[in-house]
Length: 208
Image (cartoon, rainbow, N blue to C red):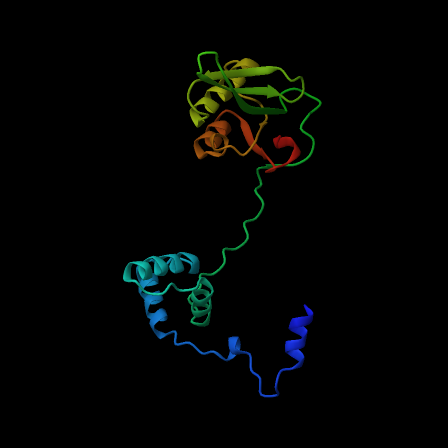
């Protein structure tokens, strides 16, 4: 606190009142506009409601409404959305050491891309055995990393190690959290082949 501010505080009169707290505003009109917004868009939180009110105020040439005021009014009138419950940790999450002592216990998959001399980008998706690091299968495309490419790599890896048979016990399929690996189609196809999808922790050492 500066000396000037301390001097002002010490010289205040006994009847001094904080104008910020003694100021009363009429929130009736704002509350009506809030009800109008959430009546049509009941899933909107206070920030989206405030954004719509601010946009409408600009169109009508009215003073902008403060976001904190919208929050206060909605809180006082029980109009705020309930917080989402905490999501339990995924059972598919992988923790611990990646390498294993025996083959066909855990396979890992990832992708990378490189630029050719003609400017075209090639994207490679591959699968490795976490024991002997053998490249089981890979696929190259000029398109993006998608679920179909991952499924092709899965099938090629199973055929390389087991031929026309399936694993007698599930093989862990360890990947990062890319959308092509988290897709429902990818996970369902993996289990059909006898693979058990696992994901590395987000921003974990194994994800780098």
